[in-house]
Length: 175
Image (cartoon, rainbow, N blue to C red; front, side, top):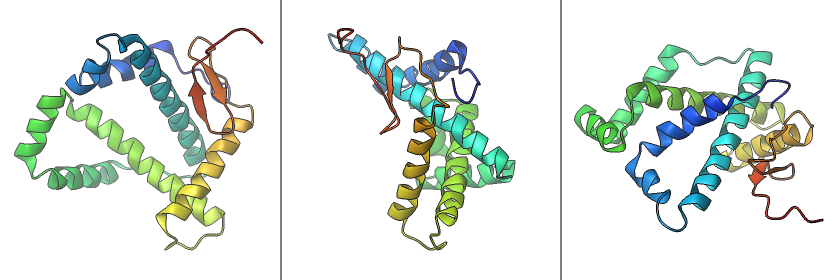
């Protein structure tokens, strides 16, 4: 739960289903370590969904938005970076991704970039500050959000480490 908003089991499953379509990820779910890997990837995806929700809250409160044009531009850059439309389409097919999934992921990436820039400015960094400094400002903010108590994780997925913002496996119930 993030600020009183529940991340549904369906949302988590949908995200996992999209990830598992990638044959490289699907292979990680097989063999003797498959179950452990599945749980770890589930924790990572849940962490991502929590972070996305926190980013969306910050963006809404600070009037930061991602337009269709922003996503189109990011998509064009992605297509160019993989060698053009034919290569891009081939990569989608190989990884079993839909264009809709790619656009959603790019929208999240652009949102992250915009919020990170805003947080860097709020921290007093100049617009041309190095990426690592902007990343540190973002990390301080996100960890602060995790520490605020606005984030709760169902124990069946693990426990939230508020110092790092990671969901850790529960390895023992003994105290």
